[in-house]
Image 1 (cartoon, rainbow over the protein chains, first blue to last red):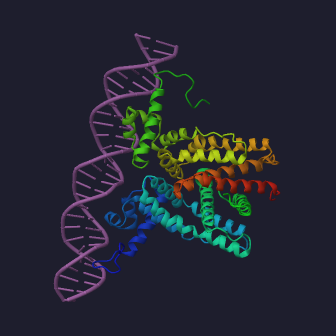
Image 2: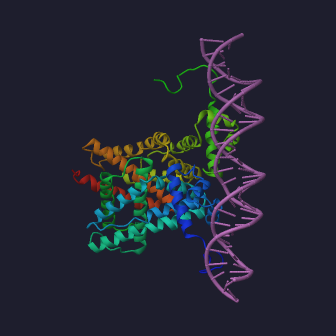
Image 3: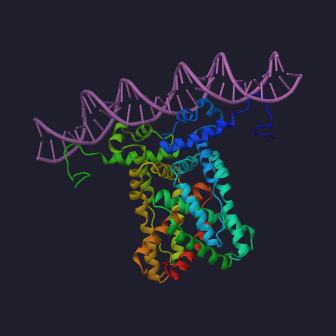
Length: 211
Length: 211
DNA sequence: TCGCTTTCGCTACGAGACGTAGCGTAATGG
DNA sequence: CCATTACGCTACGTCTCGTAGCGAAAGCGA
């Protein structure tokens, strides 16, 4: 049951430097060319490796771009600004900043589009990007409960549903604002958005769970 | 100042049937192949036209797909279900139904991804899809104000901002739920989402506009 | 130190899509 | 009937794809 790298195996090990260079080169190519015009030959040239080296490690362009983009979102963190509203505003602004970078914009949307026809790719995205960042929602809620800003959840199943909803609303709204509407998710917008979201959550928590 | 089709011009007119066939064939190809593997040669063959005919009418694959997908969203309408909450739930469910169709899923996200590097394409998307459907938000608000469910807007600039916010939140959340999280935007989810959104909007309307 | 194994860089290849050009024909309006 | 434009068709050079095969390099264990 060891599918990945049986700890130690014979032969020449894969160069870790090559992986770093390839992912960096992929982001660079995304900036210069965008997803559709990005070719693995070009990435190989930028990274200073052979084209075959990339094909030995990644099945194709989609998976490579997912890994290259996923690293961008790892720098997200939940700041402690004293109140839930301020915390949310802080992390949303961080998210918006990342989406301002061209390698994130074109790369992220393109792989999501491709994942609609490729179940394995969608799983890869969920694992390495979506589920990974959902931690921010959970952290924020816990912290707000500690502060007394949100009531402790009564039903754990209901709590999970709410967390999923919050994540979809936050990520979806920011992405739509930035990439579709094409307007900046600046402080003013984020304030208004956070206000609506928070009032909605507090109001829903005060109501009885609908049967 | 007549850039498009000077009313009447000499020569053989473009076949309207060809345009219909090409757009239908494009959606068909999106279902079978997805965006990345869709080729204009294939579309031409399905539509029963020459490849050059497509190139004479559309600059490239991106613009063609935008037009093909835009038609899908024209069937959206705001149902009158008696209350703002029910109206919103109705139109969101319609939107989710459209996003269930594979030609909408892959096509829409792909062109949005491409538009991050092509300003003209983004404008085309905004015109033929986004702005066109924003009418639903405005209709819904007007109707709710007539019913007395929402206060009339005091500041028109503020009202426009709120409408934009609502559109980004609704469209973004549904798209994220459906395409990224990969879970259905079913009745249960839509109820929870609508509840949060409405409570948030009512609460924000009751507060004084922040200076 | 010597094999064994795997990775790496390089070259080359057929397959397929791209976007364009050129041609003869069809369909309009004046 | 003539000018003008759209259409179908064929052909073309160019590019990218993904793979195969080679010799060399870099680890590990005996």
